[in-house]
Length: 145
Image (cartoon, rainbow, N blue to C red; front, side, top):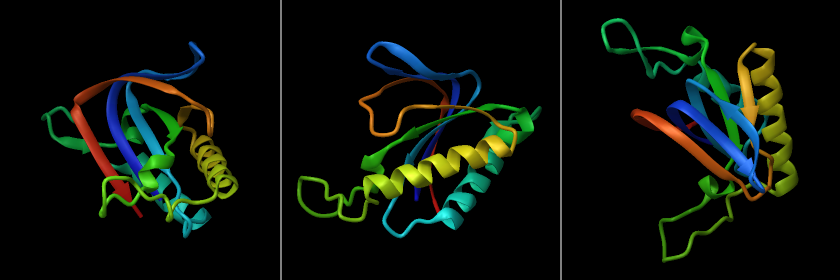
C-alpha cells in the first residue's frame, strides 16, 4: 500500500465541477493499493498517516502529527501509485490490486480513519477527479508499509 501524503493549508476534490470532498489544514493522502495489501497493511498505513510528525511545533520543528493538531484528512484513491516505472517508457500496473480489492481496502481505510475520530473527506473511488491543494512547505512524503 502506497500513501503519498502532502501537508496542506487546504485541499479539495471535484468531480464534474462539483466539490465532493474538502479540508482545511491537514493532510491530503493519495492512496494506492497493491495486490498483496490487506486490512493489516491498511491499519499500519493509517497509524503512520495519523501519527507521522510533519507539522511544526512552537520551535518550528516537525514534531506534531495530524492527531496532535486536530487536522483534517482528505483521502483520494490513486491507482497510479501502484505503477512499476523501473523499465521502459510506459508504466506497468501488474502489481496493482484489482478494482474490487482496491475499493474494499480504500473503504476500510476511510472507515477506520473515521473510527479514530479524524475529520475526514474523500474523493470517489474510480472517478475522474480534479484535486486542488495548497501544499504547506511544500511538505510531501511517500509512505509505504
